[in-house]
Image (cartoon, rainbow, N blue to C red; front, side):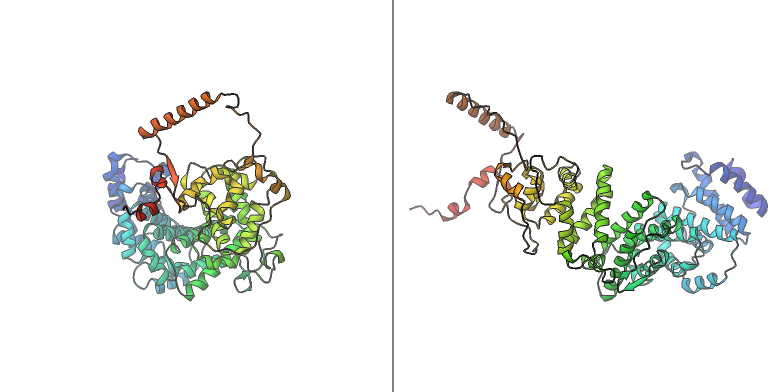
Length: 540
């Protein structure tokens, strides 16, 4: 459709004609996401023209059509200048019932009390929220204007009335809050301190997930026969979790924050016990819950296992390990997927690692699942289908973050004991971690652990003298290649090998390294020098 015709009609045509023209444009471009650069100026003028129409007193049906046009145009970040202004953002904020600017809280309550919105008026609010999401995402200028007009205030005022939301209004309000807090880190502190967004989002989750409290920071166990969480509730919950993730990225402090974070941890524990309408959506919402748990202070994680009303396992000090087991199962699913380890797997590995580092009961429970006592040591640690085999394979993954996360997790399960780690992984798989930690010479990490001893099986004890420490398993006897050589042949081969190493070293292809007394790597010539001899030499 010719944009020049639309632009000329916007100035002179009546409301019905404008609506008809724009509806035709929307129909033709509903699935357009890449635009002709030659028409950039015309599309920018169309943005301005649509905003002018929205600034008049037009009917809700015309407002909705105008906003649909603006939503389509806002997919192109190069034409958003007319929208990314104070006037443009205030118009959209008013259409979205966010009432940005001063007294936004009072104005929102006033508009919310007018509970006579027609379906058409509700669609106007939804379309305005969609436009704001696109504009804020695509325009740094609009992000700044959003801060200037206190859009965060309007969002939090809306959040305070979340129980009156229809689904799409809630979904896109939460998405806009997520976008604003993701793209403008400076707004996060304002949202937390001035508008109490963390508390409001926590209350929203509590209501949406139907949390029923049976004790301090303990939610009632979900009914196994209950219907799965509705898809719409799940969608809104995920948007709230994403916004909370942004708001909890910075360090927190104070008793109020501690109480709020423990409340969040209890709600997330409840969420981990819930199922949605599909396994895929259940895994997705659990992933967002795990990401958020990683942001909470580790001192709050005791809420995951300390549920006195439901009870726990006597062997683990009466702690309840249901949530920990769900996290282990989630980890295994993500490992078995075999892709996107960095975003999909490392968060749950990090959470389990920190939980194991600070809570003895969690570490003991996970170790019993992941690193049970060794019996069969004839197979290399990285070969097989057990959780241990899968994690050991990840210790040599090409992605540094994945490799470090898997190695650190196993290291903590072994109470940061090098000897214990090597028993389960072999020196070759653990070398990267030991180099990074400066533990090539052995020893322990810095964390202090309980003194409970790990008992080896009789099978392991009998096989231990024959285990190759590099590969971590008992190897089949190999024929000796120099057994039938004469002494002269052996000497010749040895000298040949020395010459090859020397040549590679001089060409800087390799660099011989040694281990310092503190366990770190250094060039071989440095490790061969004894600093005590140098400092103590005094010639006559």
